[in-house]
Length: 164
Image (cartoon, rainbow, N blue to C red):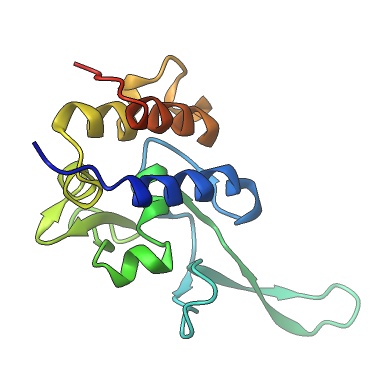
């Protein structure tokens, strides 16, 4: 049985509690996805801002000047959110482009991908990882799962709940 990384799970809980402040749409149906963009760039040189920005050109209707507007047009699930926490990235939990979709990314940790990456990084059993990170484990439809729903699942596992 893997050794649960409780401190990592607690940091993820903190992140999910603050989710509405980060500009990313929460979506348990996607690991990490860049929504409709022509010009995608990572503006994360100093690690102080963990968002991937989408730049779009906007014409000011009053001056006619073209300006670039940066927005974080991404969506992510709980594990996708974990992959952009700078402390977790330094420990090796990252995102790689999906081979099937140029705008989608998959979690990776020590050569493991997707749910297996989350399982290994957080030291979870297969059942615990599924209970926390997979949308079928929630009563709401995928689009209605809220970060606090995931927090409840993480806290239950931290308190000894066995989802078998």
